[in-house]
Image 1 (cartoon, helix red, strand yellow):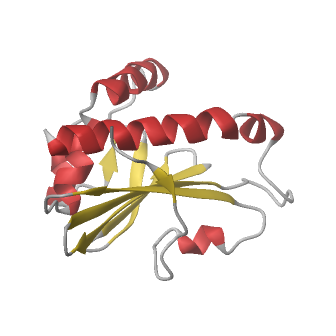
Image 2 (image 1 turned 45 degrees about the vertical axis):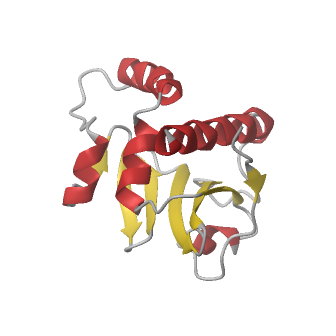
Image 3 (image 1 turned 30 degrees about the horizontal axis):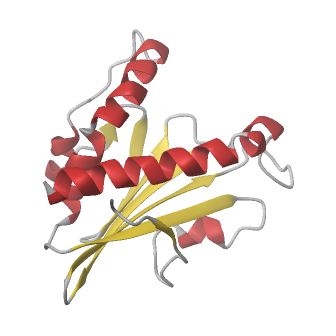
Length: 162
């Protein structure tokens, strides 16, 4: 079983811009793989897991009539939108995506280590107004969100290790 742990954000992580804002919620999880994995293979594995397919089905219902790109492998080619997300920032080892409504962020990163690759997955909830913190519903869903984030990272890691 892949060991998923809560992680401190690396000092220069793209998600730090939200972690440094008091009114934003951020989290980050990590796991280690024994093989070398690049960012784009990780992203593709993440978005093609059976677990994400369930989320994709829900998103498709909510996005009916909107043009969306569902091929995660095209992110490697520089497309700026994927499903319900827009690329906010990208580097050689990190990808930060914003949902089309602007309320959440998804962060992916890889770090090469002597024994393989460390995968990171994190998120942020960003209030849309001058409120002191995320809306009540978002705060109530943080517990299930954290479990789901761990499960998504575990599924991607298993897919990459297979």
